[in-house]
Length: 504
Image 1: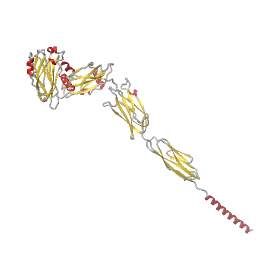
Image 2: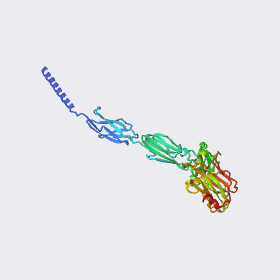
Image 3: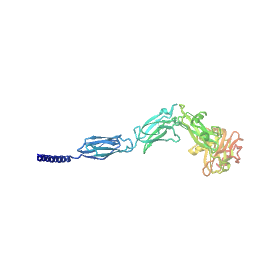
Image 4: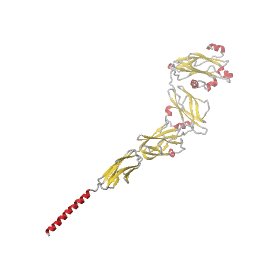
């Protein structure tokens, strides 16, 4: 009995060992899970979108999850693909994320996919466009504040920008308000003019938005706030102690005012104060050939040499609307004394009574190289600045001004010699010749020229009352000798004798 029991026990042990070996062999034959992922680096452009990653898995399932950049990046399974989607990158900087793919059968079997998204191209859009925007404002506010005319623009940008205003019209700055002056993303910018346009011409400004090398602009135009209606001095001539000018107009001028101010007085006044002062002066109706002469400024100060003055004018149209202020700068020449000037005296004046003519001689003085001369007959005394104006006009235009033309005045320019001159009544316009013997004034004025071409600061001459031969007006240089301060003009000289005297 004992021997038989032993044998059964041994058989059980052997069989158990064999089964154990068989089971162990079956476990070693099971396949291991496998996982491959491609590609491991992907790039998505700034506009966003999807890219796929191919996942090959054996003996296992897999999962996908975003580990970095989950605010802009998503990942989902789609068959054997991992679909990665990026939202639009509004910024100019690139951004980076990562996705992890893991085998479910073996958590240590994992792959990391790097995702890079490009930064957007920098842009500053104004009302949806990258090209220049334009805004236009009226020049007058009609009694309102400028803010009433505010205009708004939408700025959309992916860069930080700063705004800078540049003014295109010289002397007209700081008339435009902008807010804000910096921003990023979606911003509303308000702009409006803070002052009225006091001129008849448009004024322009450019708002430039700049950031990270990107620029966009807004062109702003404010229309002229004044009608095109103004008066300006023309053909102006300044001697050391007086100024003469005529006027030219632009637009439909009905009336105008003018003032003449020394520079220091002019600089103290604003445009509104200048306008107020102008409107206290006499109202002038414009007419052609309007000639003005001033020996004093508008504050009753005598005009002096080497001084800058401003002529200010304000014109009104037929609807009584004022144009813009016009400001013209005039500087008087330096006065030169008798010993260092170029000037001319007159001598041997005589009157030919039977035909209304007269004669005289010119004598160069000081540093006079050449001179301009004007002479003739007139019905009254004329300011020397008027004769300077006539000469100046002739030199500029190569023709006589209407005053010289209508009175037949003779003009000689750049004359180099001492000489004798005679005025014939035939020089008068035909309608005045019958009255030549009754015209009460004769005159002669000369303007000296230095060798370098510089002209004298004064014009010198004579005016003689032909109704009183014991009276004459002679202007001479200070401290200068003259034989004709008190002229008694010889009369009743025969024409032939007069012609012989001057070699004509």
